[in-house]
Amino acid sequence: MAIPIKVVPVLKGKAARDFILKADAALSKKGTIDFSKQVSIANKILEKAKMK
Amino acid sequence: MQNLLDAFRFVPLTNDLLNTYQDFDCGHVDLNDFFKTNSSAFSKQLLGKTYCFTSEESPPQIVCAFTISNDSIKVSELPNSRKKILNRHIPHLKHMRNYPAVLIGRLGVHKHFQGQNIGGQLLDFIKAWFIDDNNKTGCRFIIVDAYNENAVLSYYLKNQFQFLFSTADQEKSFFDMNLDKALTTRLMFFDLLVLTKSSFEVG
Image 1: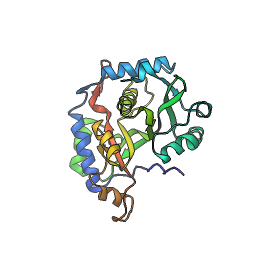
Image 2: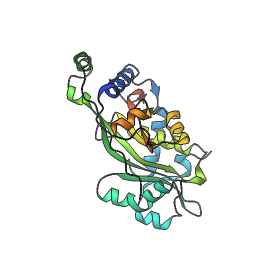
Image 3: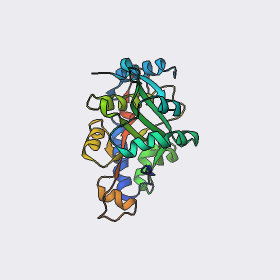
Image 4: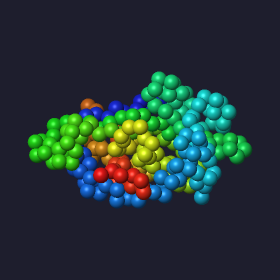
């Protein structure tokens, strides 16, 4: 029997605050990692699979 | 090093494929069992879709597989100061309390293909797939419920995933677990917002 997939609980208290801080930090870093090469590869994989 | 684009084929994992290809063995009985016996039912019940990369060389094999579902990260109890800041960024607070996400429910790489960065390429593929312009829905985060094992956690950390809960004890408390009991898995997330591609505008 496979281990059940955990349900993500609603974040509260410190866990909520920590998560919001991380999410906000990412707002100031949005688009800073160039993923164009990986996106190009993914598109080619999907085209090859006829899923594009 | 083999790469996913040139060496393999990307397809949904079906019963036909499972019956035709060699048994998938990623070294985890739980994962092997899920892909072999549960993934099809998951798909039929619209609970999660399973995809895989296959090698067509003889004997044909499933190289790696993963199951994904729609999910979200919900946050409650925001203080008033927080609400004001959030409203400045996005005017609909409701959206900020429920971050859309995709959950990687299962992910495994066949033992024969481990140690060749197939897993790293696979995570890059999933990340790229979900920042694609053709996505029908918004998706801010990738969530994974990773086995609480050093090698697995290191793999996700190396691929810039972060723990959803800062400590294992904090995670246990959210699941009403006895602190003496070991966690089988750890929830982790990756923020897609930091990624960019030439036609990808997030602002």
